[in-house]
Length: 158
Image (tube, rainbow, N blue to C red; front, side, top):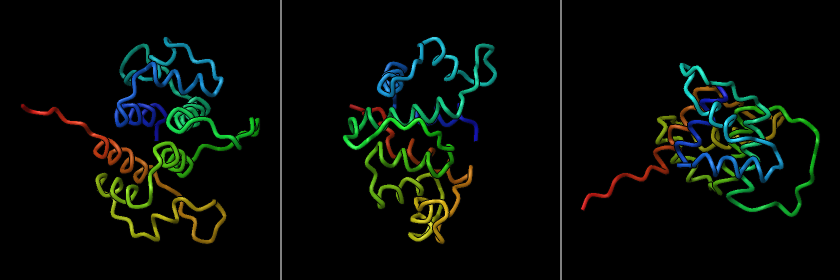
């Protein structure tokens, strides 16, 4: 899945402003100027569109965890690069939003992905565990779409 689409869908689902996204980068001591962030949030058709790197998406997700939950007392500044997989994106979102298993199940359901409890648990296992299941792009899209529904705040009619 396209990294820009992931960033955009998270921004939309959580109703994050560009300032809040910038703050997430700032919390991770990552230099992200507002103009560059704006180009990452543009549509593909826009001439100013720039591709979001996996590093930029990963740093944003780490910053989102810090933004939503506060700094981790046990976190060390690891310079070791970790490959950003769909499973890792799911894990980081679950941690940032403090989602429990029933909520994750509901979110997948809202995204029209029908997973058993065992299939759901297998997405959050360590890669290499015998019950690990790789998260497909389609499942990640379903989760992000479900997340948008889960956090949707409609207009209140009076």
